[in-house]
Length: 181
Image (tube, rainbow, N blue to C red; front, side, top):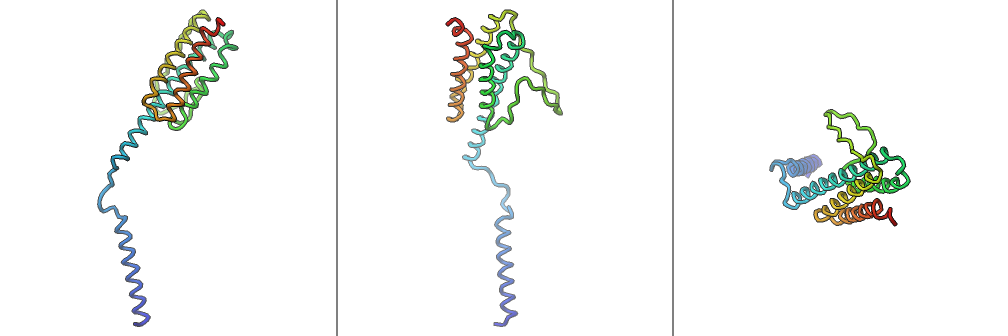
């Protein structure tokens, strides 16, 4: 075999290999359909994201209530500030891993292309004792909501929800019964 014959043979082999490689990745068979396991994983991820969004929304609502009570009754600040700090930490923890950055409740809204309805202002009782009772009731409601969400949560998030629910129950106690002790 001559040099020219070997070169032609190598060139033909390289061309055939390239053609085979392109044929494997050309997508001539059409778009690939996701498997049942992939569809289930996507469904679970969407459900977890929705659960996280609901949990963060509830925690933010509670944080807004703390802010409203503190604004209406500044004399309660020594008692409420540590509890409010705890609720703010819950908002952050509940939002990690899927809902994007968590902003403080008092932050000004960012402008968007679509106007969003502003939340209704939180009404606070004029009497500080009544305001504390209402805040305790909001803590219990939030705690119960987090406890109810445990059944639908993946294990790691369920542990977090259980912790936040227990903390909310303690806050409710401190806002009512704890004051008497």
